[in-house]
Amino acid sequence: MEYLSTDKILVIDLGAALVEEEEMDEALVEQKIGGIGITKYLYEKYMDDDPIVIGTGLLSGTTYPASASAQITAKSPVTGKVCHCPVIYKLGVEIKYCGFDYIVVKGRSDTPVYLWIHDGVADISDASDVWGKNVWESTDAIRKFVGDDLLQTMMIGPAGEKGSDYAQVCYNHWSSPDRFGFGKLFGARNLKGFAFRGMGMLEIAEPEEFVEQSLELLKTVKENSFLENKGLAPVLDALGEEGAKEWMDPVTHRHSADYFTPYATNTAFFLDEDPGLLKESKKEEPGVLISDIHALIAFKKLGLSASDTGQALKACAKYGIDPFAVATLGKKTGLEEITGSFDAITGTIPIPGKGLFSPWCPAGPVFNDFNLSGDDEISAWWERRQAVAMIFGIQPVFALMCPELTEESMLAFANIGTGLELTQKILDAVIDDICG
Amino acid sequence: MGIQINALKCTNCMACEMVCSYHRDDGFAFLSACIVAYRAKEKKDYFGVLLKEEDVLVVARPDGTEINKLGEEADPDREADASAKPMLLREGCDLCEDMDDYGPMCVAFCPVDAITLD
Image (cartoon, rainbow over all chains, first blue to last red; front, side, top):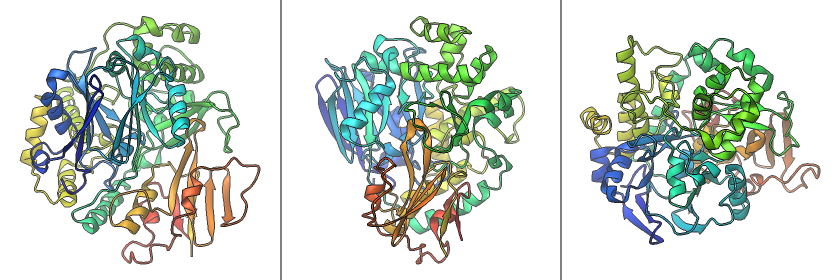
């Protein structure tokens, strides 16, 4: 695969401590396009080993607006289904440039390990120094060991090591869209996590046309009035959560975006620091970065202040447990009770549709109505929209906001970028294969 | 004429970094960009933009913009910035002089108009 690709698939056998590479076959892209089209294919190819598969979308890390996402595909220990979890922040793009389009992890290591993947090299590294540490300590320790603060991680904390059903694979220091207990899968394999760093380059079949069309699309996207806003409070408000801004304002610091995403879908709370501080805080851990819309709403509905919610989210991120599960299944209303409840979280959280995609994403359109009406139409649209976003690598919340990011445009850019002739018929078949 | 950066409007999305590197390499990468999203202080939510011009390094932080002449000693009161070092090895901003249809790519592609041409 010559364009928009590193041309390599990485297969890691933890049990045998073996790392192998496969060529990325162009015919596979012509058949499955990319993202979860291919991670699902790879899951099925190695099904006997019940693998964890990580992949990027065909447009991830390009100039296509919001091309931020990668994906984890694995069988959820919570639902028993093969599910797809978005990879957000700057992590998806780091994976795209680390030298491998897809990573298959099979087997179980005898001792704790983490996978250090950088510039086309993959190492199975000893994790005995970080096993037992929380997510923040682990990320900091590996960054310090490698000597690179920009290294991006997927890590589990104590929840994953102890085998909690709602153990979450966290990204850098922060909670993730993992509602599937993928952290438990990592822990069961003695896999503390991944560290990624990528300095690679992707070739483009028609670079000038790709970039020119990207700018035209971005200009159209920027005409949306919702882009006058930033952060999670307007999203909560759009979802009908009244008083969100007033609730969040006392601790809101700044808002940030995932890679090349026009809307800032992350909000930082400052908890032990003046939220209005513009200078660099002298405190090492002044707050928490939040992307989990439903966890915020769930803690708010329990009657917590935004400050206590931030403290609870920070504690969840360190422990590596799904904060939404903690809020909705634990139902504790005091901060100490919440942080003391992590090991006792059990039960079921609702997963919409066929249960393939993370309910971390709002279950319908945000800011724009996409001309949808009725619960059935919205539900079917949501499932298809999630599938499309994760085939091409589009930030999945922004995909719910922005009608200009159409299937037609994603296909057109994929063809300009790769020189292939991917069609709507192929995309429909890939979506059918994913969604059943 | 020069690039102006409003670090308070910036959302740290790295679009500037990607398109600047594209301008140098004709491929998608981050290696050659003379403008980068500063994101090394992640836990402190402290981010901004670094821009290497011909003779100076512009450091646009939320608390203000600092212009450091290349080769001069950095402010001893500030912690050394790991992101700045590789920047010094890169080519300085040429305002994308060969990109007639765009002007500076970082200005054209900034999704939140945090980068402008003065």
